[in-house]
Image (cartoon, rainbow, N blue to C red; front, side, top):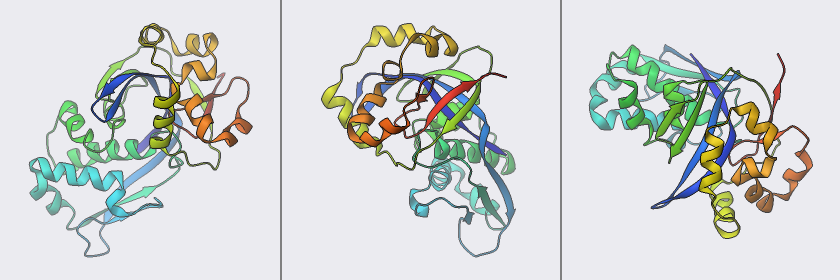
Length: 253
């Protein structure tokens, strides 16, 4: 299965919930950038055999976390039986630590695949409750909308009906630390809930034509304050996705 990337057309911080920031954001799928996940015959005696160029330990991998979360809610028997003979192979194309949601997308795709292959019979809403244990962006990818307004800490996903857009991405070799970026926002910026609600009603094209890059994404100014080198990649008609470090632009068909 293909595991698509996403970009944030706009991203506004609107509050806090415990240790989490609440946001309101427009997510859109990037259909020309995706990882590929496939089950193949097992080659080792590992409990969960995972192949792919991830750049992190298994314990930190979002797919493995999704596996553990599914076991935890009562499907350990089914999953362990399935993985006695199968392994998961992932061809990584989405850059990591880039604001494109690659890890969350992989986790969501894995949940859909194991739900089908192990006959778990879980609904999308049930998969979302499992996915939230893995990451805040996972619910968007589980629902699979081309465009959606995402709010709360990521658990509220409402489809936004609009024509799919052709997205081009650019990812500098800069790994933005999400925690550092959010801290910079808290220390230097204020929330604007009214503007966020206004943006949520506008189409993605209207948003990109009406606001500058910093106004659209609350985390861009914060990222620039932590990673000044991002300024080198700032260009007209390019916008910043999530907490970075990827930029994107909309191309005509």
